[in-house]
Each structure stands twice: as C-alpha cells, then as structure tokens.
Length: 220
Image 1 (cartoon, helix red, strand yellow):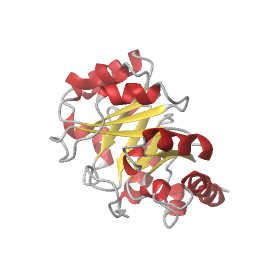
Image 2: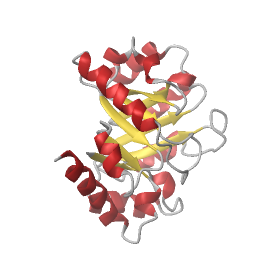
Image 3: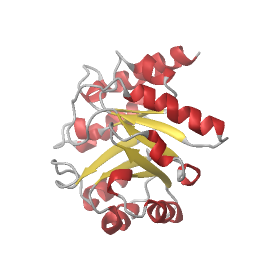
Image 4: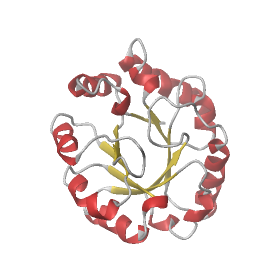
C-alpha cells in the first residue's frame, strides 16, 4: 500500500511542516487537491503554490484537479513536473486528449470518479489510464465521513482491470483512516490518500507508518 498524505488537511499556514511530516513518515506521495470554487465550492492551491511545494520536497507530487475546465489549467500544473495528475471524468469533455497531454509531459495520467459515478463509465478509456482515483467522499472539503459503498466500486474496478490484464492502479481519497484501512486494502486499493487521519493525529509522521502497517497486515 502506498500512502499519499493530503496536505489540504494540514496547517495551510505552515506547508513546510506539512512536507516534513511526509518526509519523516516515509510518505510515497504528497497529495494536492486543487479546487477552483466552481466544480467544487472550495478554493485551494494555485499553480504557483504547487510549484513552490515542488521546490521544497523530493517526494513525488500527486495532483488531483477538482476543476471545471481542466483543459485550460492543466499545463500550469504540469510545469511542476508532478508524478501523477488526475482529472475528473465528470469535468472532462475530451478525457482521452487530456490523458495524452499528461503522459506527454512525463506524468502518470489518472481519471477521478465522484462517489455516485459508476466505474463502468471508464470501460473504454481504461487502457489509457495509469491509475483511477475513486472518491470515497463527495469532493470539496476535508474531514468528511467515509462512504462505504465505494469499496464495492473498488472491487468491481479491480475485477475489470484484472480481467483485461491491465496495469492500472486504484487510488482512494476521502475519509480513509485506521478504522477502515484494512477494508480499503482488501478492496483492491493500492494508493490511499489520507488527510485528517495523518494531520489530525497526535504524531502525524507515525500515523503514516501505522496506516501502511494496517494495510500490509490485511494483504499478508
């Protein structure tokens, strides 16, 4: 299990400390939720902030674009040379074209599905994806409760990937923590985004390792 702490749940006035937590805890990625105040009601990291973060960490960046017009904004975020970039199926008119742009820039390309969007909508585009990000909360705010039915979606998606012999990772974002990490791992998830479970912990760096340990025990 790879762990991607979401710094949206950290102290946004002290992002340096948020990145230190990721480094000390052995995080696999730094997850960055980009919100535009339109596709979702909140407003978060602009491209200059992402670029500054990239210059202050060696941990690969995982950028999740929760924006209404990803076509217009994509290149600004690709300039930070993130490891992974995902765009919402619900917001992408030309998803195949966007995925190609992400890959051409050297990043892994992912599609994001809101909780109510069935995984079957990705059937035709699945071979063009490096990963799928399943939202287990309705996007827009940190700290929301986990939606358990998304684990059934994850199992269906894992079966689709396996049956077609594809190399597509499943990422899950929203409400992930110690109480459900074993179920998340059992559902075929390979990358877990954790916000409040990390930055709300007494020892945030240790929380990253604890989440990984729970997942590894489930998969053993």
